[in-house]
Length: 116
Length: 112
Image (cartoon, rainbow over all chains, first blue to last red; front, side, top):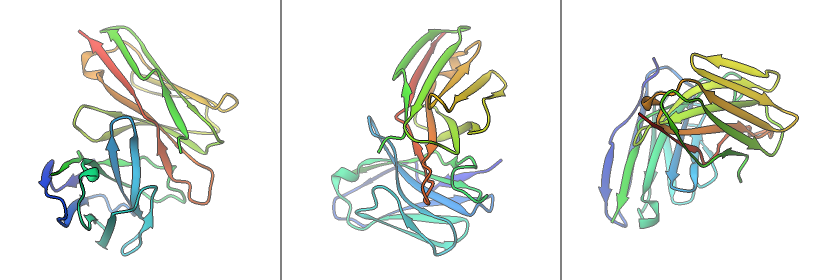
């Protein structure tokens, strides 16, 4: 079974802090994704990566950056945390088979991040 | 922008009953997926159905796709309390990007 592990289930940080969220997958998947999930807004794609050191912006990249130095690890960085970044953050991975949409995404259990 | 949207937003049924959730989308798709999310957890993939398929089964789950109506349905038969979760459809957008877009979800409560 694919396992996607997010480093923290709960995290509390202060405004202005630089925050790192880590995600590791163990199935050699090419694609990795970061989403945030907010009530009434569903899942929104922040960034994704299709290869080591490659990244693409999703729908809401402002205030975030990402890093993929190794295939199995994809990090989300909040450069200067703000209260409106309080949310549930979900990482996912998938195989590349010519498309982003023809393979299931495998999700971690999420990090519930609170910015005070 | 919302590509897929589930209906109803919330559904409450008795254990043993069938649960049906619908997903409507706006533009042509290549694939449609259904996911489940238990409270406080990540999403779990249930079924992927391609645009040239009309129906797929997995255990107690049955997914249909009607591309002429731009809609899909997820049927859970003989529901159990453990089926209580949110259910999301995810569609692609036929652009060069072809990312997956998740709907807002249906919250299903199965009462024992």
